[in-house]
Image 1 (spheres, rainbow over the protein chains, first blue to last red):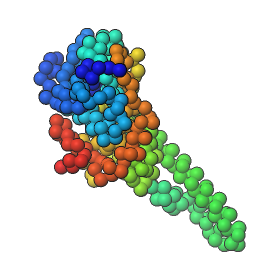
Image 2: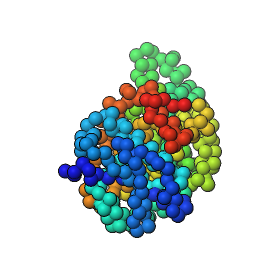
Image 3: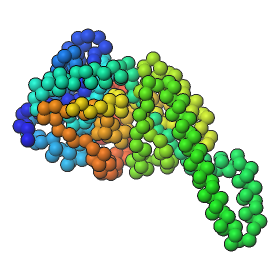
Image 4: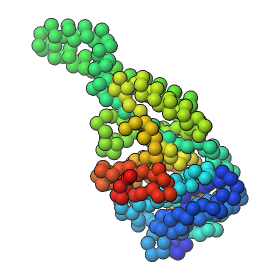
Amino acid sequence: MLAPESRIYAYGIVRPHHAGDEQSFPAIDGVGGGPVRTLSRGGLVALISALPEGDGPIEDALQDVERVKRMVLDHHRVLQAVVDRCTVLPLRFGTVFGSDAGVAAALESHQQGLQEALARVEGACEWGIKLFCDRAALQRRLEDESPTIRTARARIAATSQGRAFFLGRQLEQALADEADLAIDRCVADGRQALLSTARAEAVLKPQPPAIHGRAREMVWNGAFLVATADEDRFFDCIDALKRSHGPSGFDFECTGPWPASSFAECHLE
Amino acid sequence: MSLSLERDRNVAIADLLDRALNKGVVLCGEATISLAGVDLVYVGLKVLVASYETACRIRSASPMMAPLPDQGGP
């Protein structure tokens, strides 16, 4: 176990847009209230702050939902505070070192990997895209557009009750299958279009309804790394996708800009 | 909500947790503590979701002054 006085929380690795800018970063309070500062080594700058003494081991904090919530928000707030001044390579929440020397050693030993990761996100931001689908609206649309299904409905209506039940079940299943295919097509179309305006794409786990809180189903969740110069094209692309897929019950939701966490996924052992 | 407003620096807490806990560089070195994991995110989210339903967005248009959700957005 680490001694409480020697814990350094690290937020990210930054590369200032202008050399030396890290000397003039605004005063920011970090996780637990300690002042955020920078530590430079080997051409890399880490954004760090000392964790307050007496708060106990950071592992204990994770048992307390309110503390985790505050700490995650602090982690994010610190990165957001500098995102306009520098390229930010976010570290995973909970990266804690025993001392400044430990941070410096990590920068030194992972210099190449960190420089490469910084280069990948330089000049770009992460934007989240979620695709929601109103399945009932989609199935209505599919039915409206399909003479085959309308004919089948008319035939079922004209058959005996028992047979109509089974045929109806089959039709509903066929419609649900068609809806699945339409969702796959919309996801593929959206990803392809958005990726043409972006540097990279990351697939995230779709959130369950209890988390996203929408009536619609989340059918895809992902992120795009978009160069600042291409943002307008990216947004135009979202608008175009909303227009073309909206009538079929789809909606594209955009969040961001985020520090590029989803594109900073590397393990430097 | 118009797209231009959505594009403002609005951050949903679930998205934030997904990213902070599951993404980002894992930098191992002296005395790093590995905390993150998918289980933590989703166990945590189940508990967190109720308290965030009414205040689930952090507005950080002014990133220096990003308010906590329970202080409300502008």
